Length: 279
Ligand code: HPA
Image 1 (tube, rainbow, N blue to C red):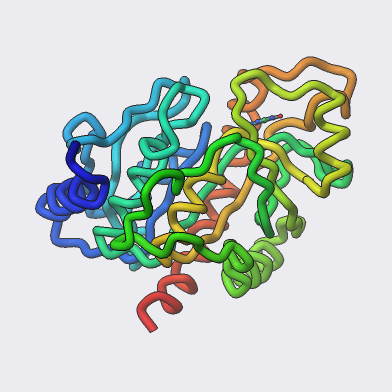
Image 2: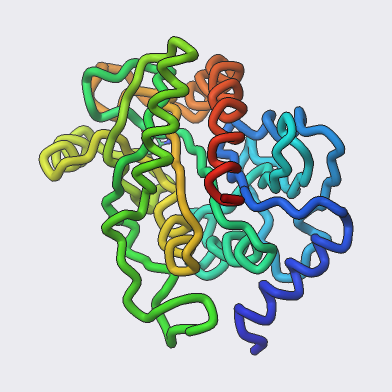
């Protein structure tokens, strides 16, 4: 079996051959939030199917392509759609795109996701900057022999979500007049939504948000020394908080509703993160 490093490296070379852009920032766009990639200028689109070893999403609402283009004057590489553990992909497959980003020279990644709100002060549609996570996925992408070319055996997770990027996101949300929230994201396997009892448990262990993505990608990014900003869109209040069933349709509808605000926030933070990575 060809090792992950060699595979990631060849995928990175293939992608970079298609464009003269050399982005240092990557975006992973979650459920219903992929539209941002359509607004990039000078765009080159690389369908995942054309990238060797790149996993393809089966979830509704996730297109499958990488878009390299400019957001304003900032070159970025955006993943329109991601894969999840609940689709049956291994943690290595789920994090392969992050490793490709690393080999492409990406130094910061902005991850977005749809999440259920556990903190009762959130409302549906709130944007929450992730301060930390709790990995309850029962999986870790670094299990197995360590590949020293990616990073160390026991990577530190104390500053997984860069403090200065959280600060930037806070300042830019304030400027845009968006309510400011920060929270702890509990990553679960899914695909069933949580039970109300599970949500009460998650609250008691310090979670403010719950979702089925992001955690493995953050671990792989930190392993490679890539800095992370992650923002959740509270597409629904978590199970049992409101006396109503959860549905994927609701998740997608909320994503659609806050899209413009979310995109404005991404556009606002990008030049500042760009200044950090190129500085
Ligand atoms: N739970 C888990 N994942 C989610 C949710 C939720 O309530 N909403 C969007 N993704």
